[in-house]
Image (cartoon, rainbow, N blue to C red; front, side):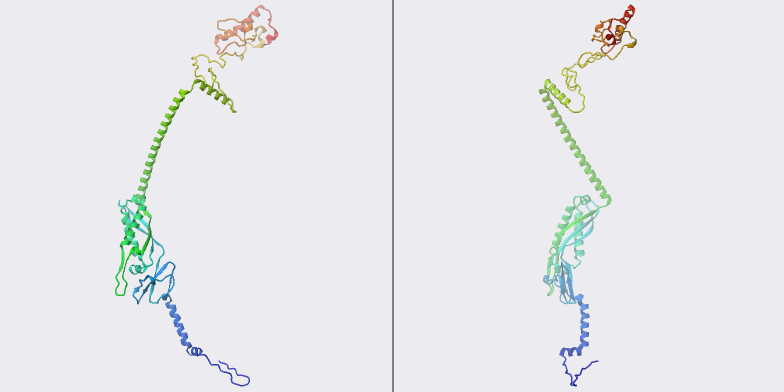
Length: 420
């Protein structure tokens, strides 16, 4: 409900004249609302067909439904970003960045072994050749062109090698050959189109469309039995090489020993001519002095020869003693022993029967019967002792005692001598 305000004085209120647009809206408002709703609906429906967003690194090829199809002019390609097209036209996107695909191919080697080779191909598309590629091959150019062609060339190259070469030594050579053959095949293949009327005609080589970076052989799969046989063969080969090196080492060792023996022989000849006996004695004296000056606990054994050098150097010119003879002592004289005692105890032996060991006497022979008392020793027998020496010594002790006991006279020896 519309309310009109009247002035207090009762006069008529002033009237406002509405604008033209307001009058138009007031009269056509329902129609305007309907038109806007229809336009919004149409925009929502046609938006996916009219707006094309080209991602980074890609390019769009325009295809016109009512104007001759694919646009082959590279200048009319849709670049990255937001692009508007008519809803009945279409844009096909192609990736211009580096691409790769991996595929496994079954092949047969020259010796008839079935194997599987895994190949990685890396390539990129030329921007100006994308419209031609789209018209001649289409977006699925990898499955239509690349996979079958590269597979055929891979089988052709692998058939030239044996299974052992493919498995071990010829992998780099195989992938280089595959790449060279693919590049040659791309140069031979052409994309042609004869235009009719206003259509454009072209003749483009495949090498101008694809930029091939490399082809890599990532794996070779052989039957397990073949792989085991190759491994055994390789193992035996290196074992044989090891034996070759062993033989070579022994040859070098024999040459070394031969040279060493020749050097020792020459050294001995030189030394035997220049070293005298006096020089050897002097070296022996120096060795003895150095040994005696050492602080370690030691036993120095001096030789018994005329030089008195250590045994290792002495006794060179001393003749060997005859068998059964007594070896000489250090001073070449017999020392007298005083370790043995008389057969009769001392407390029961008369004073006249005690011997006086005052002087050294010569050893008594078996034929002697007595010696002077002043020259007798307590054990005047030299080593070795025989039975006759013992009998002689006992007779020397017992006979004076018997003679003194028969006479009945006491001994005239002093007490001090008897105590001894």
